[in-house]
Length: 203
Image (cartoon, rainbow, N blue to C red; front, side, top):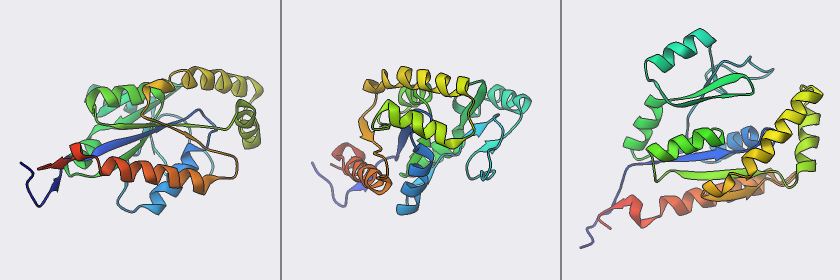
């Protein structure tokens, strides 16, 4: 029997993964700005802070030693080493958001997405891709911060990640110069997932 009023069940994780240089950081910032109810999981990393990045807003920056201590305390939902640096997702904020019926955004790699899906089977996984590998290479070179070997390494890693996108729920192409369209697509995905009958008590 359907019971009214309907109440939302536990919240869910929205995972966005993308090859380096696809624009996931700027897209995620724009998405968060467009939806104040959306929370963001802030990853912890051992990599150096890049120009313009803010502690506690872009990442929690820490040392290799402290990162290991966090692992030992089992305070990461998942963690991985990427391009020689470590990244981890703090467990506490995720558990609180899901418990409180909220949607929390995680910007993590394929390995991390797989780990989150194992813990939260109803997590929504979005794979963001550039329109072409040529476009991705241009974006990486446009940064002006990568060596040639680093660019080639990231392109090879991008191909490896793209081959695993079938594990994801949705594929979104981030066309050059079309950030707003990409954000609108992601907002539509969130709206549809929030409306799933399985996410409502009493239905």
